[in-house]
Length: 146
Image (cartoon, rainbow, N blue to C red):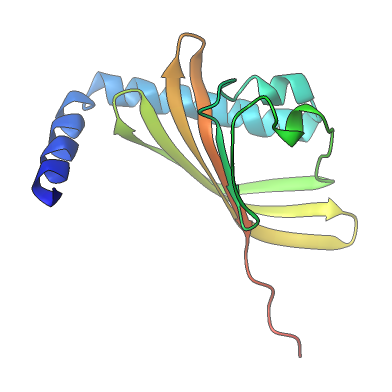
């Protein structure tokens, strides 16, 4: 099984090399930036447009994993952080039409409360362009109290 997985990865890397991987990465980065801009502007429709609208949407947080677009709480609520600062945004192709993205954040959910952490995304090529199919986010551990 390991050998088959390694060979599949090698074949995928060869097919995804060159212009396809570069285009996938560039397109994913555009969608990534659009996603963050929508958060900054508190634009729910624009934010939701960056995600797949299928049962293949996966969201993961310290609270657990949820799947599907239809019952996603973000479709029904309009909760936004007071401030979101994105650092170290990066993307890398992992297969043709699939790109992994990562960023570190400083967030202020409400004035006076600051959190730092990591957020990741997996982007897939759809007929509408690159869309987020996996989203995960978790805060850094709180420093020990003194």
